[in-house]
Image (cartoon, rainbow, N blue to C red; front, side, top):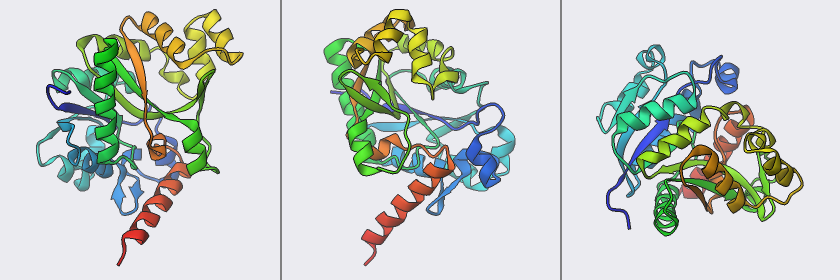
Amino acid sequence: MRSAPFKAVVLAGERPGGGVLARELGIAAGVLADVAGQPCLARVLTALRGSDAVAGGVVCGPAADVLSAAPALQALLAAGDYRWLAPATGPAASALAASREAGGHPLLLTGGDHALLEPAMVDAFCTAACAAAQANHLDLVVGLVPYDIVAAAFPQSRRTVLRFADGGFCGSNLFALLTPESGRALAFWSGVEADRKRPWRIARRLGALTLARYLSGRLTAPAAFAVLSDRAGCRIGFVEVPYPRAAVDVDSHADWMLANQLLAADAGRCAP
């Protein structure tokens, strides 16, 4: 059981040089991308505000000049339950700064481009993360979506897949930071964030033997997280997130189109 609600840390800055989607759509930041009539960030905050597990937090980004020119984003923050923080030099540095600003744990870390996030998804992850942390004395829990359910739901969509001996997984952009020691993992992340789309390079940072086992298909997910914990200096585990939409971040034109199609279909089913 959770002893206190989570605070959320929402990363809403742009990567150095600007995001691909923002450039393609001609907007100042990817979190401004319109998805079925609402900016990405608005959808994320709506989902978090609808969650029973989360009570306010910090939005890190977009940059001050982008925020000042976006009344819709200013209105999102006007309620006061989410504080704005200027983004740092990259996602890991922003996450570290925002987690300190949020104050205390547990924290839920997610992205401002997670336009398909839903309250039920958030609640299920937070509950599972707390249970896993209690059972295994974890500092940080990562949400992973089984690739099989993602491929079944979106057979034409290209996804980054972590292929372990016990199954393939996609990221969910959901992380539970449960103790102050979880900050060590964020510091470690700063060294690997450039390789986020190249799982084999991340494995290389974990050692030659780990890389060999990963490339030969002999590395299990628990074994990978045990090595990651050792390298990061804190206890990191994972839980499965049984929602294929959790694997879709709106950070490319294809995923922007997919999110719009899914939400339009949802609206059609709900129409009288």
